[in-house]
Length: 154
Image (cartoon, rainbow, N blue to C red; front, side, top):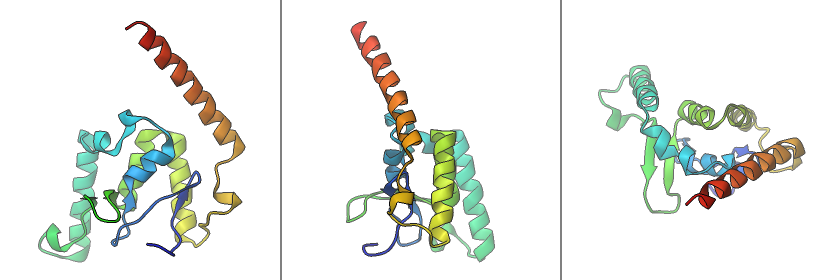
């Protein structure tokens, strides 16, 4: 998607695949969270599996195709190539963002709305606010202190 505008979440461009699905791995990186919030962890959950199955059933119904192979999958992984990663339908991507953190879901919702309305760009308005950055710094500082304390016991 070189040369095209992409949705920007807290200052990070989120790649899309050829079907307009959003890269969950890049969303995860934009969140600043650790491996415990990686897409593969969420996708293995019962809730995510049910949500994906429900969306795929609705997609099949709406386009009247006999099987999902000829329809768009709600989630698909690309291994290798120019754009590897796990790509998901917009509704799945927003739900994944909510699993990461409620405030992150709001950031993702707004970024996707801005992107679809043509307001998405990498200008000053797309960058995270100072309050957001300070808040994330404090969260990460506390997490680091906690991790260092836990490592001291081993």
